[in-house]
Image 1 (cartoon, rainbow, N blue to C red):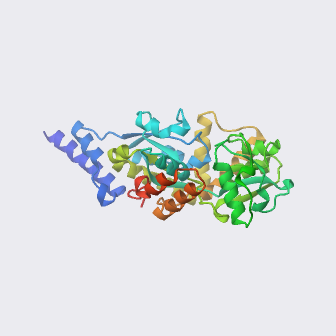
Image 2 (image 1 turned 45 degrees about the horizontal axis):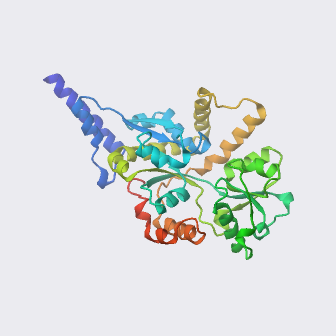
Image 3 (image 1 turned 60 degrees about the vertical axis):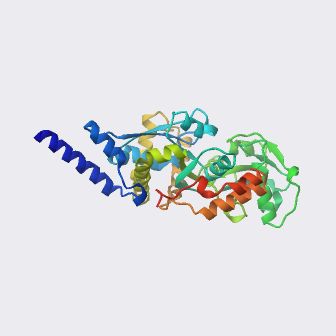
Length: 353
């Protein structure tokens, strides 16, 4: 009985330490996973399978740093980074039990919510400058020059690409028919679409990625930022899950947010160490470029990405209200559905603060 009592006290100490180290808001203060594991005699890590957005890249740096530096492990989490089988259907992957959490952009989160999907975002961890890229030799010097140009964009042939360009044109005082834009199905190969002259414009691009890529290919890219030309700034990455999984995993998700925040602290204070961790992880997975041109581009992309990780993981409801208004105005979501879909339906700051 003495040994059992000592083990019980040790478990309580571990759980208490976790609760203090990763202090939860009052609504989620109970470390339920600790309580559950204590009954089994051990403090079992909570497994979290995280679906990446598309493929592993520098935008995911806090996840890699938290994983390799042991921050997740210290938070009693067993985190697995996965590439979803269908990147557009990550919420379905969660409902099917293949992953627990996924990454997305606020734009897609709002669109999914307006379409009636059961989703909830709970932490922002990446925010870059995004918008439209073009080549300066095209003669484009200001947004209204884009009227009637051909756009390459992943959502081809939908309204998203033209909606972004048209909003910028109008913000610059221009007038043109939204049907005047040409459309090119270039997927995410933005730089190639411009280089091959198959498109005049490419959107949506991240300045820390495609601008760097274009410059390293000896192109002369120009750039119009969403935030400067009337488009809601949605070039961010957030964590989301289903409302059901959020309630089930809330204490663990809170600790995940704090472990990633710890990783962001290291990225800001010691970027050299953070980049070494990332490159080591890539190397162990066979993804670290070795050819000089690619290696230089990789290093430049990482350097451009370092400032893109905010300390603040929350997003104001007013931001989502404006984003949804813009989506409805540009006919990217149903107007009636947009009016009925309030930010509280698909975003919470409960564990982000």
